[in-house]
Image 1: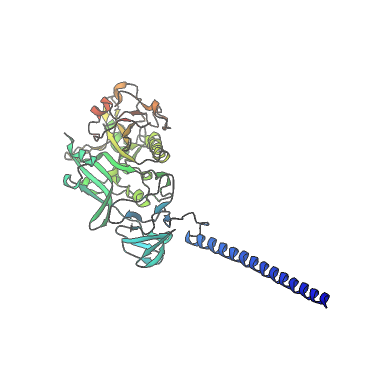
Image 2: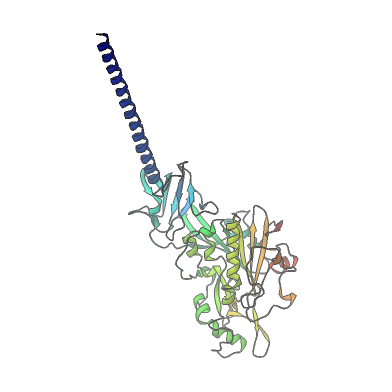
Length: 457
């Protein structure tokens, strides 16, 4: 009887152990299943909230968007005229969670997907590329301007200019009749954005200089933006002949007539050397596509020999952009003209070169001089360091005399970021000046007055 009782007790204990083991295995399986399901859901949610870009590194809930597409609206801090740019060395613009910004297509329509919101719409960042408009979620990747936007070009008078704006120095220039032009956009009835300001010589009909700001994000600018046609703003010209005629059709006959050559002579004007429309504020110096196309205004160009335009001056523009990008710094930039280029006529007498010379038009003629030099003042307002870059605008004349230069000392040997072919006459003989160089300040006396404490090297 005792033996039978012990067998029954042993069998009961065995059943308890087996049941406990089964329960333990079930619990482990349940835990593993929960972990797998939760982990899969977390990855899926992360990918979705990140616009399908994979794992979510955006733990703050900010919005990260690409605003450098050819049809992108302008991104503006709400209620201001301040453009929003990516952080340096990035092509992504970051907007904090719940911050509102304005999307602007001036004189056009902001389109998001199939919906159009007028020229201005305020959106609130949710996360990733998701924004809220009137309680509805929209994706910034679907935002665009419905068509190309035309800029607002106007004159600025002294009362329109803040006291701390150096463009006001233009109205202090003596012995030259000037006005100030602005290329920008009308955001709304209370806001106007001006991104190029131009000190314009109303007698010669070309700019003395332009002013604009170069963002540190410039090398992540909109690419493959179609070239626009140059537009003329008659408030700055008021002439019977158009700028297009002067640059396209008349330049060879005009220069040959000045120099006493046959009307069809190709001695100076030919397929390799001709007068181009030299941007002062270059298309590629602007981040947004809308600003790039808006730079194609005749008020923003000056007559520039094609070999300088595609040679050392083009390299200067590239090098300045690379400096801003590599050093993660925003730069202030003034680009200007000085003097009048000249060539010997058939009697070996030096003649100044113009694109418009009509003896019967005594009111306007001569005008549109071909500048002797182009200069670019590049300035870092944080370090108060700057440099002036010079390009001689005549591929037919050697620069052999010190008197032909506008600086006492060429400081380009101290500058590590320039990659020009500076002594090449065809590409444009070039050098660099300190802003405080005595000869430069005396010669180009209308250069804006700023505080420069060192060389931008």
